[in-house]
Length: 258
Ligand code: NAI
Image (cartoon, rainbow, N blue to C red; front, side, top):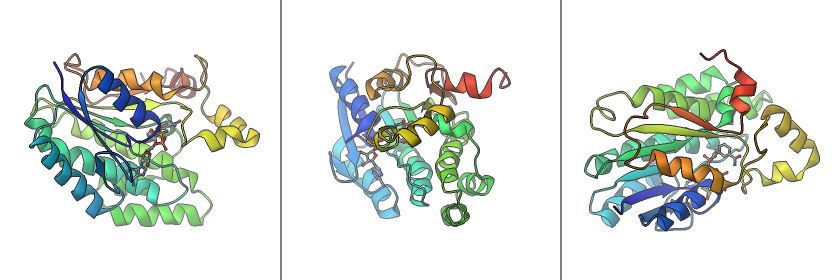
């Protein structure tokens, strides 16, 4: 049964591969991105987030069957928490009414293996409190003290915890909408290519994200998991952060999470 799906970050990397796969499966895909696709919107801003929802309503008549939030950046900068956490929450919350009007609705957001790395609790707490300016201030403080790398891990930990909190509530489970995160390890995309091309940073990446199964991934290897979580076949999986990381989480956290 063809579905109508909206994918953010659809112009590149994991979002592009997911949009391609969903189209190959016969679904209609509305692609959203900064400067490309059916909807052009900057998800770091309130205006861009409102534009996403308004244009999605226009294009779909107010009904969506799946939303996949992939848009993200990895800068040592407060912009990262604006896009990766607040942009994703605005995408999912803003489009939820369209999902509720859809058929077998599903929502997926792309987290990261980085969510298990050290984080800055001030950024995560502010993000989970929904206080964007406090999260931005905490991110700026982390950058100023030379810990800008914590902004990315914190943004991904926050969105993962948001999924855990939101998924079982009346707004999601109660309305029959599974909500999950997919947490990739290292995927070769424009986001990571500069890090992988430099031998020094490549060694750092390999140490911090060990991937014993198959090594670094291609976006096409992440897309099928996202597509399945976004499909009617996923009846019961919700509130999960599913690692697609070649074993990195198992190496980094061992069996202590159980
Ligand atoms: P990418 O850079 O290839 O694609 C990201 C897309 O998001 C781009 O098309 C970009 O224009 C869009 N985007 C960025 N800022 C935006 C904004 N303000 N508004 C709207 N769109 C915006 O990156 P990739 O690797 O495909 O990343 C996709 C997601 O996967 C991100 O959330 C990233 O954090 C996550 N991820 C990536 C990993 C990797 O190793 N590549 C690993 C774990 C998670």
